[in-house]
Image (cartoon, rainbow, N blue to C red):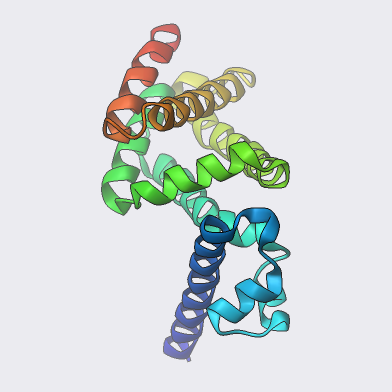
Length: 196
């Protein structure tokens, strides 16, 4: 039984990924405003109804890769050694996360550029980031250096995510001239001076 559940979950994940890739490709080719849910479903080889079983709209389909990465980043922070300070754990987690997943750099840039140009994508992305901020604050609140201070984890999570957003924006504005990790380190160093 466990094996069939695993197979079923893998098939669902493969379908989600296929829909995400189709949505991203069509958006790049035709522009977000000219892509319909029906077109995405057709490109992924599924029905409109099946699309609705996986995503509430085309925004969710386009940003699915980011949502998956968000969950992985939070898990990575929680898995860091308990004795690490919060800022150190956050920085190490983002480096470990980037190394382990090796996400396609082009996809990062495409999603970020799309969100900057389309209000509905930006709104969805901001909602994702708000949830991530909450989850990261919870993850760092359990560390030794924050056991009695309820505000500091919230500030650290917000500062960490602001650093990532600034780094991604700089990376894109530099036309991907450097590795994302290099830009992230530069911004995190600067922000870390306030928390180190």
